[in-house]
Image (cartoon, rainbow, N blue to C red; front, side, top):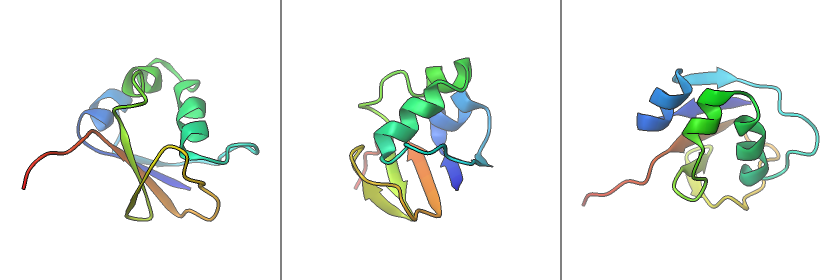
Length: 83
């Protein structure tokens, strides 16, 4: 699965994207975020406040409870404002 990081999430993780093999049992975006946080200090820092970071599965904005089965790409980004 491809993970893409934007804005300060990218800066904290230290990469724009990566290809990962998601372990069994990781079924939702929330599970994925928890697993990512366990991968190192940079991920812990990027996802330290899970309620702020937003996600999109295959270019569709989703909530943390969204299931990731079949996803080709998951993007993480901070909240956006604007008009």
